[in-house]
Length: 122
Image (cartoon, rainbow, N blue to C red; front, side, top):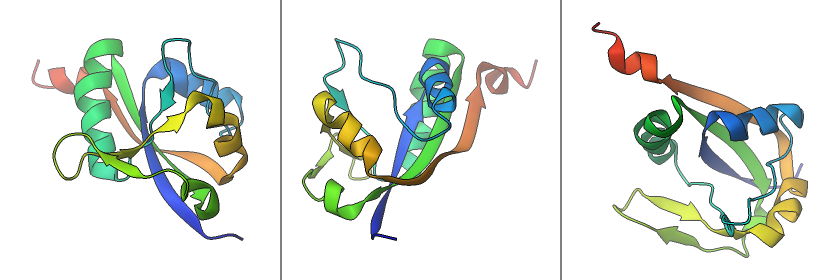
């Protein structure tokens, strides 16, 4: 097995459904208005996005974890997009299929958040 880098991806229900339909092996192609696929470098940041952005916009948010061959990821620098922990890779949409081919193992669902969690006190 090759050396890998662990990536996290916050996602909404529609994207997750497409991952499930791939057998947990591939990310779906980007939409025309999505020129970049941006997995994040740490679980905490992925949780923040899934909980604070995906839940309000779609009712649910999910955090996934997957492992990509290091030799593939080495061509993409990480970018800080906010606080020091807000780091992510920007994979151009045209490179997504190659990244999918570099995934080792399955994409894992590690956290689930829903709108109902915000209403537990009701």
